[in-house]
Length: 77
Image (cartoon, rainbow, N blue to C red; front, side, top):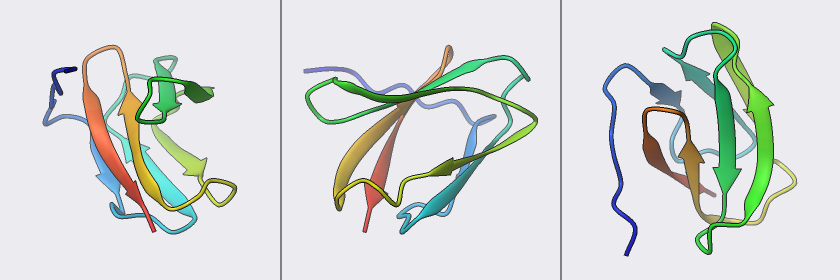
């Protein structure tokens, strides 16, 4: 079982998400990865001061947002 690390400096809003989600608190140039529950990488994006991820193409379910310092659970409605 994969351990989930939380970093209070990374903020995700909203969570649960319907279409678009904002990720803030990351250093510009950091790599963000969205994975499914099996660990398959669905999206890789370079962070800006405030990054907007569009999840509208994904089905409802549980996903994970991975950064260099944390892994956070995302719920897609």
